[in-house]
Length: 480
Image 1 (cartoon, rainbow, N blue to C red):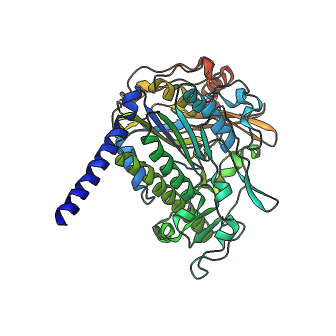
Image 2 (cartoon, rainbow, N blue to C red; image 1 turned 90 degrees about the vertical axis):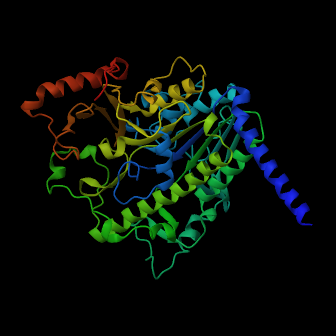
Image 3 (cartoon, one colour; image 1 turned 60 degrees about the vertical axis):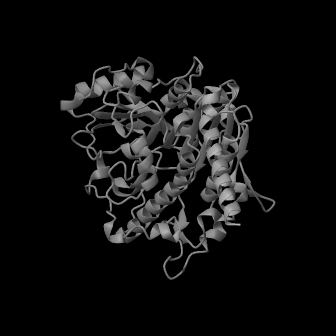
């Protein structure tokens, strides 16, 4: 009996080894690299791998140790659908025409080949799991729905967790009243007494793991896009993630009393001046949501380990734009042209690139499409409006773009911004201007527009903004 038991265990181990070896050979047989794209919603640059003193992201830290960390990545529009549409189409908002969350991406892009569509056309299994294109929940006839930008040209498979997740309002009420006070209009957070797997992002992680397992049994290369909704508000995550953070360690953003005096009102979103305790609660909820999201990402990375997929898989992780945590005397969320909203988070792993390095050259989210296509050996469409940054993967010390561009609409007025290594210049219509020296004033407290000492710089930056992205050259020299 002991011998039979021993033999059976050996056979199980052999079967597992064979399974892992088959998965490791999957991309090699087809000669194509797999792609795992991971989106986090409303995630700014606060992380362990970016040196934040208290935000805990152990799984992303491990990914960063394998990857190139693009420290100066910028979105083209700090709002979910415009940013995602720009990245996935490889085109800028002026071309996509998407400047809100309600206009479907195909409205003005009927013939555009989106990034996953390019892979599907080249024999890849493409899966959208969670929020990749923008989607949001609504209820029809009492049944949860999701306006899930279904794009059959792009995807072999789509999973919308908004239909399956328990009603968010019910989950939010599942907090412990002794430790989590009732939600106020300003709090946007709640401590949940549910397992990770009962949340929307938990369902996304579970489905992504199942799809990965299916794919490793096939010889078809995959492009799996997994989108988590945290740390987007409301910051509703299980209690154990709130327990990671001590109120005393959370710093309330400070700014001069006159910070808003020289900022054109059109440049601001709603100012929400919370009390210090309210601000700490809100930031704590955001940090807890980051750590919760990090745990879900860790499940995917563990599956890559389990099936030995690192040798034939490209992994890209990013937030869809930046995010405010109370800066400028009470700015929250996104949709500004300040650094906090436009500065994004981007890690890129590919088997051939250097590992654990920081690239400080300026890149844009619109550059992701041509970069991933080049890494996978696919011919990208000729009408893309970004530039592949593949050269930075093995020479991350190099400078890259001279300038990056972003925009946002406030009250019907288009705000256009250009960011260089030292300055940010923003125009609102024809008569409202902002200019910041980010080397001297990284928090953008002092608007230098109109000051005689900066008139030449202001004029140069205006010309750069007016001429646009097509005229910006790459910098070939090494940085340091």
